Length: 249
Length: 313
Image 1 (tube, chains in turn blue, purple):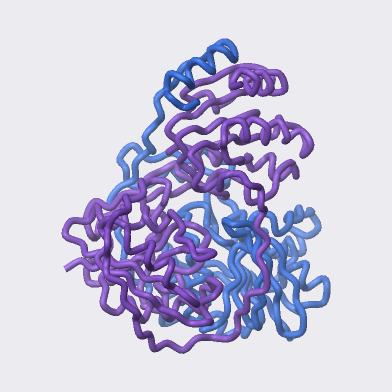
Image 2 (image 1 turned 30 degrees about the vertical axis):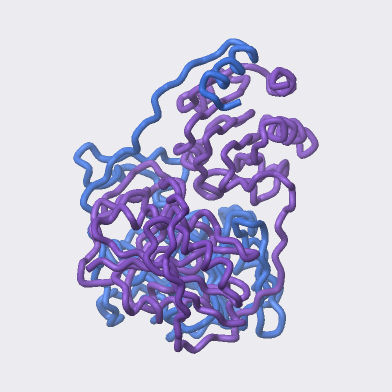
């Protein structure tokens, strides 16, 4: 049995224009569409492709969040995951605590590969995969744009500032996904029906024996400073004149 | 006493300018003592360069053949060992720092702050969330080490001319062999590096094809600029991945940013909002890019850009 564990985070849908609450205590989430974090969807798609090619026998999706997170896990099951685990928590957990929780799931499930999105598009932390790899004392291959498996090893091409970097890691390992690793499949109606019968276990966060205490306190949320509106020029000559005036050409 | 360790980023024996920006961030914290650590196979040249940065007290060299390539799993235990004597550990919010610093933090048993754009005190910082649609002020517990990545676009590099002491650090850390470097393919274009270029010309979906992108390259070469692309242009295959500018690509802060045929999706604007001057060329007068542009020109890019190139002589 070779398992892949995939993390799915419930986040504000990427099409929603996020607004800061007037009192600065957070962003508006009431009545806002929630979805699987797009990078995590890519992670699940990659896991399913690996399984379809015979590289794994079971794909497990797991999430940490409120009871409503079952919706995103059901979507993951409809995409093709075999079963789901929800670690229920009404309070948000910091990435270090999320990594500790995933380590507990690893100890229980013994996956060969843990696939996570490189970052959640809510807090934009980009930390959990790296922290999990450190706590697990295993390799990390972050920002993956290509994953090839070969007898107990993974060769991963990573998107780095300088271009593309390829590393080889021994399994088990943590892989985090970048945007262009794959294009996630659409969920079909019959799959949604089938997903309702797949197992979804719920664990109470308190039962895992993990320290979820926070180190950081958010004091306030603010809208970003707006850039002041500039000038419109009529033609190229005016554009060049404006650039010359600013000493830019 | 606030003691800040900065992990230097370097390649090919040269210090990455992101390091000087991390020093700038650290120097904003009152009374902080700032040191830099250089991990490399041979750290001499990079350490000497780091020693010239204003505000740096000491440069530590950690030399090991295993450090020839920046593998997070190999570097993290060494950084964590050196960090024992510090209250803060900063790295740049580049792919190097984003890969490494959370691993360092977890080894130290602490959390991490990502993309800090302002340090209000040793334990109070500002950082963007939701693709830059909100800025949060965060307070870190003062009884724990603060590990953070610094949003390089938010800081001006400190000047050179300093002369910090350079010392070899003795690090006792077990290094894993489970992660191996294979290869790196960097596009050698002869153009300025996108991340650090003073001028950048970017093309969007309206450019229409990979072949048409030569219009963008032409203008960039005329201006001596680096080249970027919107996510739409990269997804469509008009430009390679490493040229992507935006929240999920590179966040840049050039003196001049020329957006050609880019509509201005929020995630793209997040990547350029610290640019000094933004010029937008787009045939749609309603394009959101004009909301943030300092100079806007409505017109067809295939007419305007060649004309502009000509007008620049």
